[in-house]
Figure (cartoon, rainbow, N blue to C red):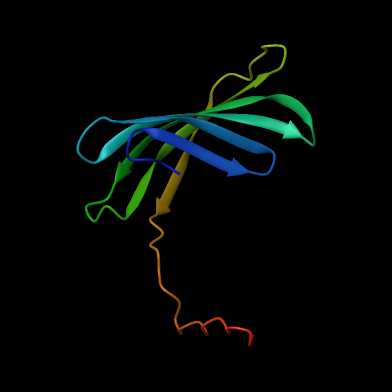
Length: 108
């Protein structure tokens, strides 16, 4: 998830992360995300994700490339790997298709 003020978040079982993004032009940005890697309650290290992204003309989709770098708890690094391709689309809020039944007030 990217916020309007430049923050980036990911919430996924075993990989929670935060970072930042910054516009590089009207429709392009770079992002860095630091993911904490856990197995159960054991911290294993971090994965640093670096991405270059471009938003399409509608503002509803993006595409780009990213690299990853694993850093273990001892500071050893895998080195930067990639680039790999990434793309995504905006998810819009939608109302329910049918109206929900109103709550029933109990007698009394």
